[in-house]
Length: 224
Image 1 (cartoon, helix red, strand yellow):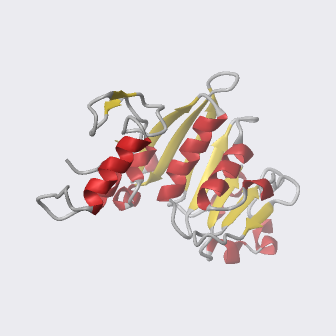
Image 2 (cartoon, rainbow, N blue to C red; image 1 turned 120 degrees about the horizontal axis):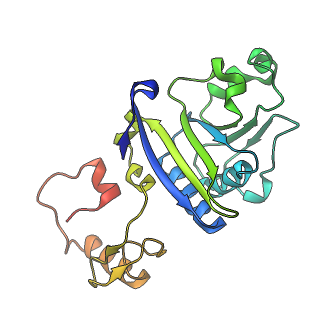
Image 3 (spheres, rainbow, N blue to C red; image 1 turned 60 degrees about the vertical axis):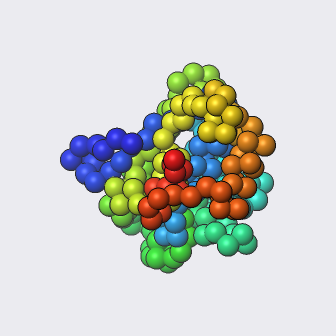
């Protein structure tokens, strides 16, 4: 993770590259793991970069039926209840807003004061109303079907379980088999699902132990 300068103080930056819709869904899942009730996420994207596609993947990762998710361009706000036990999702598109003045009519105080996760397209249109600790997701074109994702999240998120998952994966070696594992392997960092289950069994049967108290980071990075 990279700490950025004073202009975006107390923020951490993560960069990810997507070459396909499957990659984008994986990135959305990694973000969903970190998100908590009440988080506000700014979606700062080029035209046609796939903001709604990303929100649809994020909804699915949170346990919401992705088929229900549609662009709120004309209605401004779509709210999705979540029966999975994770927070509800509010999706806003502020493109047609001329400022923050109309937010009261939309129930803004209720929305940002709720337990829902709020994802906002064109957030610059309501800049003055956004919390300073809102996370930023910047999506830009890098090719016809490829996208670059830049995450800027509050430094306080460094203590959240799963934060390490926002970092770009690198090729690694399977801790069970010693086989090289490509960064795009769905079983990463294990060579395959069997290796993952064998490792999990070791922890469940207490064959694996650690010599110190577990820390939050261990949930992200594993323990040697």
